[in-house]
Each structure stands twice: as structure tokens, then as C-alpha cells.
Image (cartoon, rainbow, N blue to C red; front, side, top):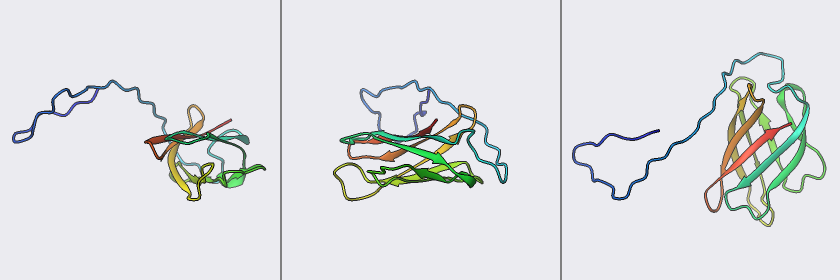
Amino acid sequence: MWSQPAKAGTKVVANATIANVTAAGSLFAPVAGTNLLPFTSGAVTCSGGGLATDLNTSVTLGLLNHIVPLSPNANSLISDLNAKTGAFSGSFIPTGAKARVPFRGVVFTKNPMAIGQFKGTTGRGLAELAP
């Protein structure tokens, strides 16, 4: 649970809510010359955030953590993993849109997968790379 202590001179918020959240983490230790995730084929999915249609693109994980979308790549997915930082990033064009939507996240070596988020038209959406 997270809460912020009251500070002198600040307003009290009526009907404030307190939220319990579940968090997950994974230790990241870069290893030069190896792939961050132990699978070579999977899918990048993007959902929520007001998308008219969820994105689900089959991919292969190439050498040096490069993510290669398989045909068809209807949403023009571009994505990569950063071996030094464990970052997962990319962008896609939502169905019916013209502008690219960027996403950012991190690799979870324990699970193994990569999870991130993007800013959608109605809030945050989920971006995920999994086997």
C-alpha cells in the first residue's frame, strides 16, 4: 500500500482512495553476447488504452536481442531489447490510425518475458513480449 503523509499547507482531498497494488520484479544482470530471453519465437501483444483492435504479432528473437516481426506485420511493429539495460521498446500503428504509438518496458528474466506500457487514447495500455 502507498500513501503520502499530510503536509502543512496542503489541501485535504475528499473521498480519496487508497489502493493496494501487486508489484513484481526481476534482477537484471547484463551478459554480453547472449540473448536476454531464452526463447527464439513468440509474440508481441499490445492491448488496452482504447485500441480498437488488440495487436498480436508473431515474432522471432534474432541474434543480439533483435525482435523480427513475421509476416503479415499489419501494424508495422518495430521492437527491440537493449542488452545493456534490459529495456524493451518499440512502436506500432494501431488499426485505423496513421500515427505511431511508442511503448517502453523492461525484461523480466525470471518469468521470462518483457512487459511495458504505451499511452493510448483512453489511458495506458499493455505491451508484452512472451513465448
